[in-house]
Image (cartoon, rainbow, N blue to C red; front, side, top):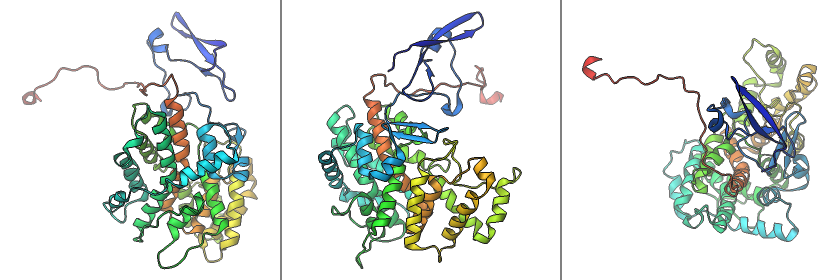
Length: 431
């Protein structure tokens, strides 16, 4: 914890209270209110915790006004352009970029953990075929603690390490199996000769009847999707993982809780909402009508995939993702896909419109990742599971950091109670 160099004074009636102020290495100062209730008998009120720092962290920093996203101090666009996903995983987990030898060892460790326990295959068959893949993932990941007893002791550093590697390695396998099960195809086992992203694509799209060769352009685009979604500071699902872990829950239960939170359309479903919007628009010919509707404050229609709640200027991930989107569309073409044709035309129309540039409503990472996943052949129901695969390393990094924090205690938010006060019980005969 940083040293407090200044204080804030809170006045309540005739009483005043001095509250320590801590200054971070980047971002706004924070006022320490941990002793506020003990000293003044009051709580703070912050629905959504949008003005509350729930922890200190060294993993990820976001400056929404500048359009800046840093992992351990490295700008995300540099990492996505020069690194690959497992290298970024190492950085998030251990704090520094790996040496060649460290990276080789880490990649080898992850690669040899990609298979899941054979008995877990039966778990998938307990779901309906039309179950959402996220429902399947929540159940299967939560059930991992029933299969991997040797990595559930959160107080053992070695077991935490094993659990971390297992989750990063097995999550693509679980997501791919959930997809295969939903479309009635046989499971495809992971291959140790393929890299992380290529292996995931192979497990999703290969079939026993013929050989499937992963195109390197598609594998690179998939790797970038993983990299650009690896962590995003204290968002809803990350905070859920931290809150679950504060109770001492095992790592698999904590990550399952994060997946459940990510499932919400306000969080992990943004690129799915973007594709559904493009399908609603239907054709490039309809774009002028929908752009006019987006400008009309009285019209409920909004352009999904443009602007961002956190980034008030531009999404730093979007530039790299746009490059991959262009490469994928050049490879696969858009001529026979009206959704992709509409996306391409909408991007051009919005970027050329002064209204969107003045309001800084630029295409974000969800717009481009949605286009890429659609072009690859993924149904929209798989967009959020892929997000979960990407974000697993962020959740684990935050989980490990929290467990190593001497200030760690069980999460217990307070409330502003507006219900009835004490009442006398009325017997049922008198009601």
